[in-house]
Amino acid sequence: MNDHRALSAALLAAAFVTGSAAAGSATTKGGPDQTYMYYDTQLRQTDGVGFRADFTGTLQLRGDHGYLTGYYRRYGDGPFVPVTGGVQGDRVWLDIGRGFHLAGTERNGVIDAGGLVGTSDVTFHATPRTETIAR
Image (cartoon, rainbow, N blue to C red; front, side, top):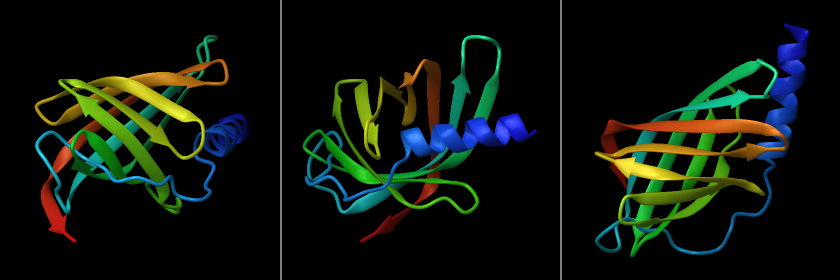
């Protein structure tokens, strides 16, 4: 259990280092939209020797001409971490915090992506919620 907590802390420190929010506007397909889309997320880390850690959280995104901006937050006591990204066709990429890059696809509102944290493979799955909040 302590090994799991240590690796979890290391992953979060590496992947979700907070800092100044990246500048830029966000977009989805179609045009400017001031409505955030909310997602329930699962981040899974596998280190190549069989260890697996799962992290659940929320993602809120809004789009503007193919650019995405928003925030990621781990369930529980996690801080709001800035997210930037983009969409082209069904391809999507997201940068969460500093240096954590994911690339994948969006189909029927579901985002499936992957990336690396150090030498660990990471998969990311985001399922849209039904509610939206206009800002």
